[in-house]
Amino acid sequence: MQEPLANPLLSASKKYLNALSKMVNQLSIDRYHYVLVLIDFHDENLSQKALAEILHIDKSYMVNILDYLEEKGYILREKNPYDRREQLIRLTAKAQKDIPVIKEAIQELNNKSLQNISESKKQIFNEVLSIIQDNLIKIEPKEIKKPHTILKNYN
Image 1 (cartoon, helix red, strand yellow):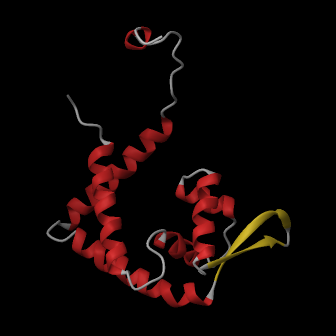
Image 2: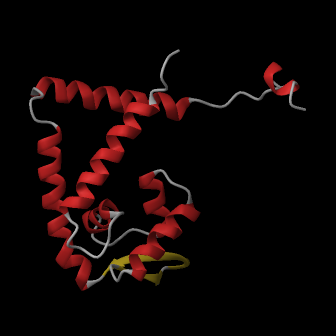
């Protein structure tokens, strides 16, 4: 039986995020650190919708993330003066103070995660991940006309 490709990727992601959370445990958030870095990177010119698109997540999950960050005092949402249907994400002074700590932790964790890996292998790794992502985006689910034989036994 072939293991789903998602298993080792999820395992590495969980370990990475767990280590990051431990490295910045002095902050008052324990998740969504990278969302703050992204907002800062885009000079607070991101709408809620644009942020969800960058992160490839649905709008309802984005709302949950932003609710958490707002509750913890890291972001504010304000109406876009040019499009009242849109909400722009603003960083608070607290976020501005904590973002350098998060960036430093990410840099350190990236360095530790990739130690003993040559530059050429890192480049290949990034290229392969990019190809996998592109391939997955292109996949369109096939419509199943009839239930799988296993499902027939349960109907």
